[in-house]
Length: 382
Image (cartoon, rainbow, N blue to C red):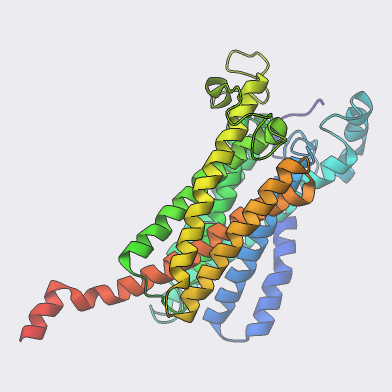
């Protein structure tokens, strides 16, 4: 695999290709919503959110098929904008290692992931520019551009992590952060998509609980990413015990050493199996806490009179069941692709669902705040 790890020569071609891919949905949104600028912007945001969710799933597919180094340089493939221009290099790498990281199929999977990511970057850039253009017409003309600007900063940072994923040879900490970055993008775009949505009034305790569950979801997603990037899913192949024990032999020190290469300890020695067991079992124990928290919050919302809040409650209960079923399937069925993707997607859906609830409740709280301000009370007394 003789390839320069960072070769920017095909970058312009990739940017043009991403822009070309993004033009199609952008044109469809433009045609569908006519002259309504805010409606166009919202439809573009919703589509971008959908594409981000797809990209998170395709990123998981790339990782699960061991295609993360299908093209061992970045942003192209052996200095070309597609595997078509690197056929000789791919053939040579595949002949040298038929089951290695570089094959024709893996190269295409990796590059399709990059094409989608580039198109997503183009859409987010367009969304940000449109948000600022609408704001220049006046505060009432369109949504606040804050979320769109944050999403633009996020996609630039996420692109940098994508480059590090390749150049650092699937360094577990970087790959896990890249996955968390995908979930952060879902959060930002979900919040952006709530512009104009109906406000939801939540009691302070329930609102705080929703924030807590969202933070727990991110912690659990980090643990899940650490399981996946270290290939620790099959360390426990039975349930509810692990290796026939309620507390198997585990090596937390090596398992949770952050600064180390894939499959290796910080000393450069092969990672012991007990470390993989510690990674897997920690994620499993944390899942009990997170699923219970989601279910309890869901039940609390189901007890509200507001039909929308009850709908959010049913969603949380359903997502809890989905994550339990898909997580168990990964263990007892030997990590099948469909179950793994379902588990990744379920985590993303839960983060987006909770974000929608929290943002809409926060908007209601912000709108009501001036009514109880000291200044308002002073004027009321007059």
